[in-house]
Structure formats: structure tokens, C-alpha cells
Image (cartoon, rainbow, N blue to C red; front, side):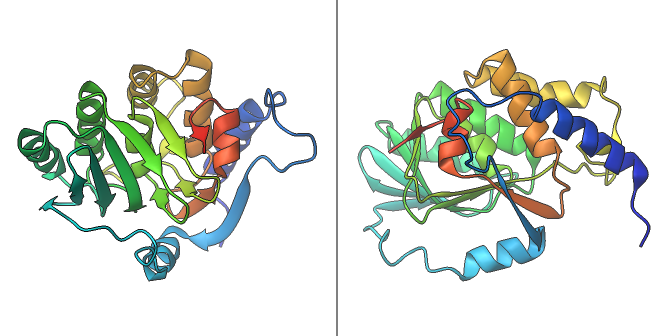
Length: 232
């Protein structure tokens, strides 16, 4: 199959922008990111096959879609964000208004980007912290949701994976011009979540450099280098 030269040139430009200089605080000789040659569908299937419940199981007091209330102050998240997920989150907060931390256990991403960004803004407005434990997995649009935490922490053994968005027309970040307003929607969201202008642009370039059908695994340590989280 012939390569898509337009995508290739766009990805080269994004990669150049991302790698224009060393990451402050980045350990010399340590690879910045790890690219996995695997389709996104295979990645999700493999992730679902992992046993994430054995050492992370906790009694559940109530369930609201992917949100499982563990106690008065803590909830876990397991599952995909869909169109109705913001309403489920709102229902949880009405019933459990003292939730302070969302522990993200197995979060494959979103089926509705607009709902996902709306949910992120709700989570931020509620002043809830996000945390990914050892063995926890946050992928695709769920990474945006993680960034919405008023405090973002992760175990060094947590898993993060990113890739580009894809719209209803099948376009991805590399398929639209650099001045298209769609890019600004994501960057503005990151700014609202407390990222600096530099960090927001940098993270968006990272996600946009990977095709929707692929997955790029990023170690928590590297996300910490980018100013996106604190490693426990």
C-alpha cells in the first residue's frame, strides 16, 4: 500500500515541533516515548484481556454507568465515555456530593468527543482529583479526562496511551490544515485544565502525531516531565 504523503509530511512536521528541544528535567539517554506497532483495535482488545480487577477490586456502594462509588469520598471509573456519561456523572455527584477522587482503573476512551470534553469540564468544576493506580490503564480520550483532575497523580506502573482524534467525516488531526479551528478546541480544553500554553501545544502535538488506528504508549514519568501529572 502506498503511504499517504500528506499525512506523512504532517506527522514529520508535528514530530519536528515536538522534538525541537530536550525535555526539561528529562533523564539523558532515557527514551522519551515508546511507539507500539499495533492497531488501536488490537490495543483495546489486549487491554481488556488484562486482569485489572484482582488487586484493584473494592466493594461498590453504587454504580452510575462507568462510575463506581467506593466510599463517600472516592469513586472508580471502568469503561468508555458515551453520550450519556456526563448525565451519569452528574447523577453520581447529586447522590454522592462529597466525592473527591476519581480512580481510573480501565478507561479505553470515548465514543463521543463532545461528551468527553463536557465531562472533563464537569469533573474540573467539581474540583475532583484523578489518579491512576499500578496496573490502571487510561487510553485515547480518557487521557483528556484524566487531565481534568484538579490534581493528577499516577503510579509509575500505570499505563497511558494516546492517538489522534477522528471526526465523523473520517478526518484526523493530520488531515486538516494547521490553522483549522478544530485544533484550537483541544488546545483550549487543555488550557482550561490548567496546562500552560507551551504544555498544551506540546501535548496536542504528541497526540496528533499518532494515527487514530495506532497507539502510542507514554510512561507516567514522561508525562510528569511534560508537567501533566505527579508520579506516586
